[in-house]
Image 1 (tube, helix red, strand yellow):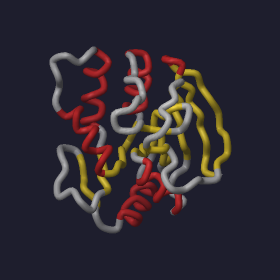
Image 2: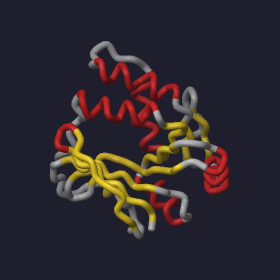
Image 3: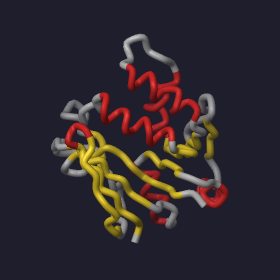
Length: 181
């Protein structure tokens, strides 16, 4: 059975994006980006909602100005199967499957039939999955910035958590790992 992990960069005050026109999270520099590259390499399936999927489609085509770490990440992201949970999208790109009906049943089956890590992206999607007991771990990558508002890591619901550990990463990012209690 897979381990379903919701993990995202967040500010010290708990936001994954800032307010429109306001401060945002810093872009990962090479060492931190390479850390995320290794995570993507170990991810069996990536599950996301529409908004995050549309942002991540950036990685579908190489850009001439990309640094080496971005050139390393793009093929890893492309090779990872993606499940996109959306009722508004009508189609998705390469190596992606659109799930608009029976999302819960699909994800329960996926979790029981997969070995390794299933990465969950998107705060609203994670909140819905947590309410169903599908999220096994939360990985908060805390950036030492304060955004003062925006989209919170925990959308709408506050899960009961049990501390698993911490790790200091490049750019003074602290990984806090929690299990669903």
